[in-house]
Amino acid sequence: MTNSPPPAVELRGISKQYSRRDVLRQLTLVIDPDEYLAVLGVSGCGKTTLLEIIAGLVPPDAGTVWIGGRDITQVSPRKRNVSLLFQSDALYPHMNVRRNIELGALAMDTSSTAKDDRVEEAAEMVGIHPLLDRSPDRLSGGERRRVALAKAIARRAAVRLLDEPLSAVDAHLRFQIQDDLVRWHQCHPGVTIHVTHDGIEAMRMADRIAVIDDGRIVQVATPQTLYAQPATPAVAHAVSTSPCNVVHFSREPHAQAITLKTVQIQWMEKSLPDAVGFRATDCQMMTDADSLQNGLLLSAPVEALRSVDSFHYATLDAGDQRLFALVPPHLIAQAEHSLRDPRVRCRWHIRPQDLMRFETQHVCS
Image 1 (cartoon, rainbow, N blue to C red):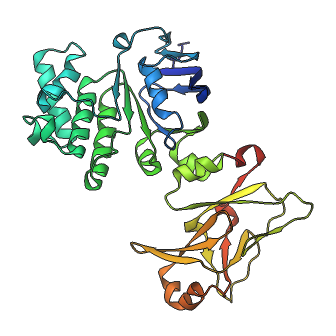
Image 2 (image 1 turned 90 degrees about the horizontal axis):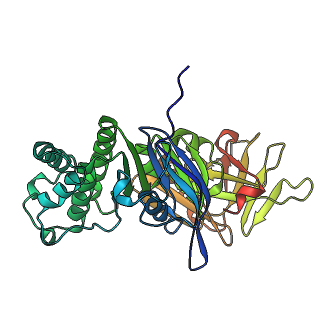
Image 3 (image 1 turned 135 degrees about the vertical axis):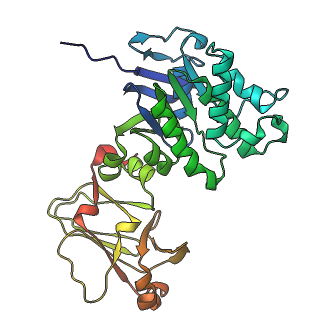
């Protein structure tokens, strides 16, 4: 009987404070060999600090860091076989692009031929081959970001840490580089940990996603599981491609309806959760002929109607929050008067299978 290999990276009870503020709270995470893991969360949730602790640049206040089954918490950054792409580009201004990328390859004691091959491969992947002889001061912000990414790629460390790697990359290049990064990861053994605030980016690229909220990991799962079964409202917001709504219910006996300012909400199911979430794309406008047997029913005037590309979003004012619904193009002409008249209550339906149910311990996130 063979023993299974140890996790490539394991964090055990990591905590970190800055100025008495908890940045990471008893964070535990296991990353499998050759896994592409996205760490997803809003700005300030602790994502970058997590990478700095793995790289050895910042010591944890509590907990340990393990790589390949070895406790490396006290090991110097140079001896960890870890590369880190910083959010700031960190290029040497007195060296041209080629030389900056070479430094990444040289960090791994590669031969001259291997070094040249790595520089060419990395430059080609991120689309900067024509820029190899330029100095950093002649590059745009997006070009500098791609050079920094190429530098991290050229190193080929066992653990690759990417801090918002595509944040300044032009939109027309972003999808292409996402695909190239995943292919590169698959061709070169090792773990990639990719920090991002972009849920779509994480969903496209990662084998699994770890969602951080307020210094804690609230869910780790495949993109498909996170989208279909988010554990908390924070997870639902993070991975939704359209606006995500969360509605809190009263816990009074037999309470099946509530009013949020001008929005009337009726729950048609038997058991009442503490809160439900639903995406704007799943909130369907009803006509007078439609009847409702189950799910969630909203009745409200529309505060605003906005068009984004070919999509039309209706905004319902619910006091201290707004609810969003997607209006199909064929209903815009049919119901435009109702949608634009604040005196008219429009009806919206969310099917049971499109509702995300949350209980008390998860609602406040």
